[in-house]
Image (cartoon, rainbow, N blue to C red; front, side):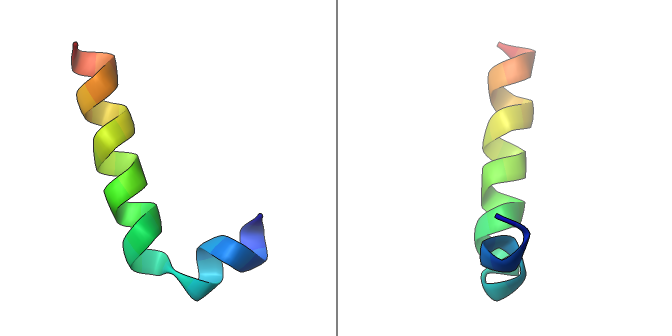
Length: 25
């Protein structure tokens, strides 16, 4: 998983933002 995140740092950022938004809900 770490390798995948390393390959797509942008995706990780988007996923993080989505997770934060979900937590806020």
